[in-house]
Length: 160
Image (cartoon, rainbow, N blue to C red):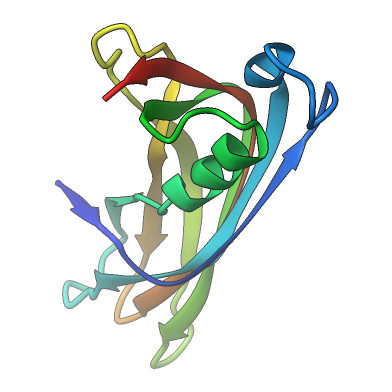
């Protein structure tokens, strides 16, 4: 079973990587570096005393960063714009846990989640991240920290 984490805090940075901010039409084809960081709450409580693992998804709000890039690129406000990922580097770590004695916990896998092609808006559209947390005995995990570095471009330039 996969649970959705609840984002408690989030920040973003969006940096143009190539091309001049003031040139069109190349502006729409520019590459961007998006950095999303934050803290998410999860409910990962173990009462069995055995090694347990569970999958979680985090869906950061990336739309504000894309809207910033859209504005900087001087794209019409009526355009639907998404972020098409070319390269990614996610990182998740446990930030808050309650441990009664000698218990263990870890994050042992993470990956990027993509949206399906949205009717011609592009491919590799960023959606979120997924990860697997592992713990033993009565070590309860409550919060994880995340950093997602994405390199890609804006896509989906169609009026809505």
